[in-house]
Length: 323
Picture (cartoon, rainbow, N blue to C red):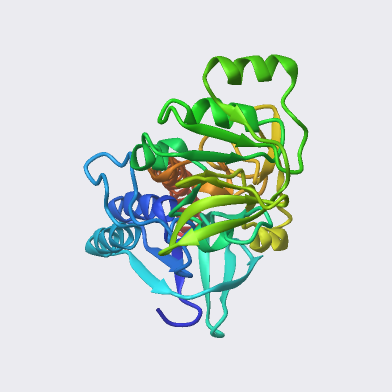
């Protein structure tokens, strides 16, 4: 890649969504550049799950495989940070932090999201290992173990009931939030989920793993895994330069974060700009993100096909006039 090169599509973000889209575009014989900052959301996790054909693959290995596949079809993948996106005359300018810039006829932004974790000592240290949020991603790995759920809002009861499917030993810590309603208390009790009141002060860690949840009273409740509910904040700062702003995303009746609004193909309100993966949908897991990337890629390719056809028509008309 050199400065001022022009590509059919520049993909910002090299995770499942970005690489999934880039692969489909490269196979469609489009010139594709993927710019990857190398900071995937799932980096703390040991393995990815529910990925058909690649179940249990380490996240970094899955990315490496995806990169090789994109490059095998002629796509270009570079490590780097995109510092700015802007509109040009008929295309977009993509500025990189190292001073280079390239042009793109279309953009696919797959920059993901940031998990904003509860401010409890030990949570960030154990995130992705003993501190979890998605039962479909990690439930099997902690099945039949002592699981705690750190309350953070109305969805806490839902989380506790959901994780009860993987273990008979589930405790809900309302923490600083409101206690479950009488109806919720009845549901939790019927499923054998205990509710332990009192704010959580910190997590006890033994040999790099969670061993207990310490309350401000000093009481320690032995736990092997803790479920939290992060706020999912979309990494959408780059899109602000194009006039695209995030909106709230509601999950289980509560605002859980932000997302970039787009149509089913990922097309944003700005023509020529698509989004895929967690930047558009905070609930998308690896397989869903890759599928969204491919859906966006097919829509982008069709858009370019019509743009190419129209350009060919205009060229033909110009030649006829000239002759």
